[in-house]
Image (cartoon, rainbow, N blue to C red; front, side):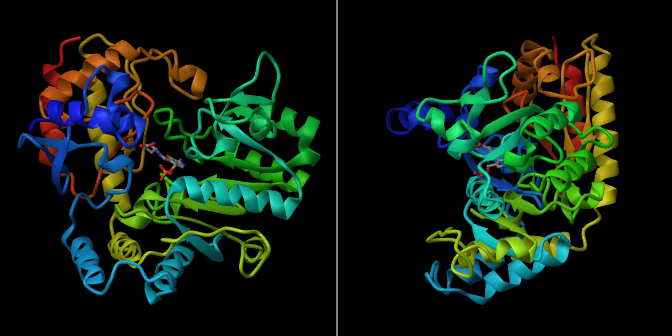
Length: 421
Ligand code: KE4
C-alpha cells in the first residue's frame, strides 16, 4: 500500500485519517505521507522514498531519529517491563536532570504530553493565587485543554469566546487574550484586571505561528507585571525547552519564570510532558499538597529512559555550533528564494527557522496573516517532491537536529533552487 491508500483507509476509521490535525496537510493542499522509518535527519515513507526531515516530530527529535543510544535505552527498559504504576528510579533521574538544567525549576512533575503540562500548570497557578483569570498571547499555542482554546471576543472585548465547539463559554470566560509581543496591551489588561489575574502563560519564543522572536524587553515586561500584580509567569517551553538552549529560552533571555512547562525533547520521542517551578508552588501539587493532578503513565519507565538518554547526550552537545550552521543555512535559503523575486523573511533561533513569504518582518500573529500562504504551499509541494520534508503549515517552525549534515543543507538549497513560483 502507498500513502494514498493508507490515507484512504485511515480516513474511514480515524477522524481525518490522522491522530493530530496538522498532520493531515490540509494547510498545504496535500495528502500526508505515511512514514515507515526514520534514521538521523532522514525519514522514509511507505513507498521507500527518503526525505530530509525538518519536522522532527514537531520538535522532539533534536538528536535525529532512532539515535542508537536512545534506542538502546528504550529497548533495555522495555525488556524489564513497560509500566509499573509505582515509582521507579528513572523518574528521579530525569527530574534531577531537568532541575539541574533550569535554576528556576526546583521541583517537577512528569506528565504525558505538553497539553497535560500546561493544563496542570494553569490549575496550580489558579490555586496558588486564588484567582481564575489568566492571559495567553494571541497566536501562541499551549495544547488543546479547554481553557486555552479561546478566540478573541468581539471588538475591544478582552474576554474570549470558545475557539472550538465543545468548549463552554464559561470555561473561556476567564481566558484573557493579548497580542504576543505587545507589552502595552498586556500592561493595559493588568491595569484594568490585574488583581484578578492568576497567571500569564507565554511561549518565550512563539513557535506556533511560524517563528516569532520576543521583542527586546517583552519577556522582562511580563516578569515585571507578574511581580507587580502577584500573578505567576508560566513559560511554556514545550518546544523551546532544551532546544533554544540546554537551559531553554529562559536561559537565553535571562528571565526566571515561576512555572515552566515541558514536552517533546524531554521524552526523546516518547510521550512525556512535565511542569515544574519553585518549591513554594510545586509542593501544592497532590499528594504533597491539595491541588489534584494525576496520570496512569506519568513517569513511564520507557519514556523516562528515552528522556534520560536524550538529555545525557544534549548536556555535552554544541548548541552554539548547531545554531551557527542553521543560521548560515537559513540565510542561504532566504537568498535562493529572494533571487526568485519572492518576498521572504527568515527568522531563526537556535536550531529553528521559518520561511515567511512576506515583505515585512513578522513580529505578531497579525503579521503572520500578511504572509502569502499560496507561495508557502507552492514551496512546500515542490520541496516535498524533491525529497525535503517541511512542516505542512506556514504556522509551524522548521526544526533542525544535530544529525543534519552540510550535505543535507546543500541538498535542501539545491531543491529550493529548482522551485518555480
Ligand atoms: P502536546 O499536547 O501536543 O504534546 O503539546 C501541546 C503544546 C504545548 N505547548 C506548545 C508550545 C506546543 O508547541 C505544543 C504542541 N505543539 C504542536 C506543534 N507546534 C504539536 C503538533 C500537533 O499538534 O500535532
